[in-house]
Image (cartoon, rainbow, N blue to C red; front, side, top):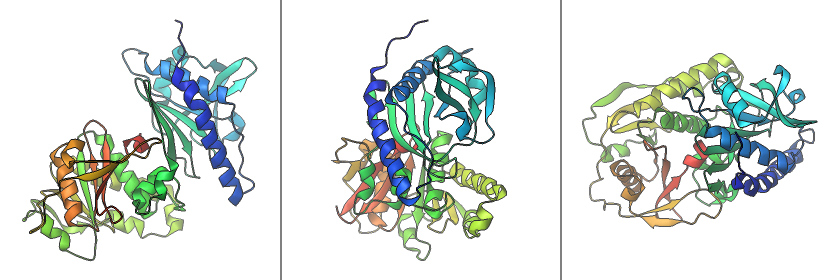
Amino acid sequence: MTYGTYPAGRLVAGRVLTQLARHLEAARLSDANVPGELPDPSWIEALIETAFWTSLRREEAYVPKVSLALLPREATRYPLVFGRPLPLVPSTLARVAPAVERPGIHLGVWPDGGGMSVWGTTRILPKLCLVLEVAAPGLLVVKQNRGGDQTKYSNIAVLEGEEIKLVDEDASSLPDCPSLLTSLLGFDAPGSWGDSVNLLVQIAVSMRAHGRGGLLLVVPADTDEWRESIVSPMLYAVAPPFMELSELMRQSMEDRSDHHWQDALGRAVDAVAGLTAVDGATLVTDRYDLLAFGTKIARRRHSPQVEQVTVTEPIEGGTPSVMHPTELGGTRHLSAAQFVHDQRTSVALVASQDGRFTIFAWSPCEDMVHAHRVETLLL
């Protein structure tokens, strides 16, 4: 089978390389020993083009999902090396996809004398390594490993057919940008993937993964004012509050480096995120104590109904727009916007069944609710 060109690959390759160069320079300002070399743009283009055509194939009726890491085998520990490198072509990637479709496994790709080839697989990536994931037919995500923990990536670009979305790094410089969005963009310096802000990122990813849609409200732990915006009695109140997440986060940084702690955190995150699949809102405090799920939101007494929100998406060329909350997705989005309008120290995370994800936060600069569309960052 022959394949045509995928124009988006050439359009994106140079811009991705510019981002990689900037990240490498910034990393070396703080650590001159940061390893790595910049790839040739033709390598990135070949990676994108092959991944795109792979995504449109079927192997025994399955859609191939693969993660391609651009690195030589010497740059990783414990690589699984093929006795004979495989050609980087869609038919080959589709055939080996079932072996590497689980999270955290990457096909290693690097040029050899005859062009680009797949040398094997790896679970461990060096800092700043470029990764390309085939997420769905025609849907590709270009990302980069931004820290020592191989599970922390930052998206650089999302390609869906002819549509190209390049993540805008400057979105994190907004004066009232929520810390959660800053962390999603990957330009904070949390020091640990287990810190409190990044915990919300993990919950957001898990919420989106169950595919049923959901609403999570994060409220201040030191006040009960949020109860004025919740229908009482709460049908699924949790008494006493479920504190596993908060207790795990109170453990020392040394304890957090243990894989048992990481496994326990992942299970607790999935347990809380799973509750958001129940109709209604799940309530957690900003200390991550679970208070209730399946709750109903009510407009605060004497508070006006929210009629409009500012909507932005952190992609290059994106412009803010003002719209009614229901234009974002319906009653769940309206309820979230109303809650944040009435409880301005709270944050609402809304996952839609179609994969869209929105963070609602009060914007003092705009004096209104700001809806941050962030599904591009969660793919």
